[in-house]
Length: 479
Image (tube, rainbow, N blue to C red):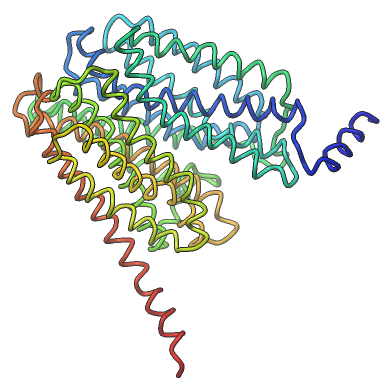
């Protein structure tokens, strides 16, 4: 007890500095979110390399991205609630263990179905790590140091986003794509040991014992069925029985999901939030911005390597421009929102990303391509990073937690579906599924269509903020 009191006195005397244990807690959470983010974005540049190894098309491997995102999106809220109920330390260690174990399984994959299945299960581990990393820090720091600690952890997440494509490109070219998965193991092990050694167990004593597993299962299966129908429609035939039946099952499961959510006392997604028009528009716009990010990342990786013939390493260097643009905008977005309305900043960001994306499809010199890529990243970063901030201003204080969960789920699931749809559209535009990933003109056409989504989101955001702006100007005019 004397040591505990002395430690608190020392912290107060030093102006709220971090002790050795405090730093260990921050490092544990930072490593956890870093490895999830880096692994997420490292895969984009590895798709062509993996496709060559397995003798399949890169577009068929979109399931490595979309399946992983569906698992995260469907289980993220469940993972957060499980941590509140069973203990945050226990859940994040379990998540790190699952993530590390499935990384080894991914690295040992002998064919595409094996890798895709392992990647989806790996997403369940990420769903436990992603929401709990910050919760571990906020529950440990209960004083004015909490903001700095959380900012440090989130900064490592942005670092992982920026480094992911570069690391993926370097390892894919100079080592092996399998080694990218094996990097996860020592990092997860270090994070888990730090958590077990320094992080005390915390839980929400007021949390109910309900986990919405039926909701998570129905939305995941429903989206998966629809994605399979879209992905296989060209091969099966768009009006064939297998395509129509798979799509019908997917729609039925999503309808069941809505029915289940309306009846559950603590649903995965609070459907009543959709009665708020401004909340709906902002959430949809932010989701569209994340769709743009996902499609730019996947399609540009194919374009740079397979259409323009760049090595994975050089493509990774070019991708640093996009990643750094997104990371910088995400970092400054919160501060900018203190001076300007978040939804108007989002709209400006989406206009920027849409315009830059159009320019990207005509730029040829690699140096200018990287410059436009960075501008596109800045616009994307403003578009999706502020979605949570903007929606919080339009929901009651007691609903902010549910709103935040819905926004994050929407962003991830929209992104997952968009990747599957874009892969099929690319094959249709190209006219050849086997060579679509190397068809530069087809990729540029799909990216131009993607820019329209950014403009659509910007239009919706300007539409809902314009009446508020006129009202404010009217109030400022003397009567």
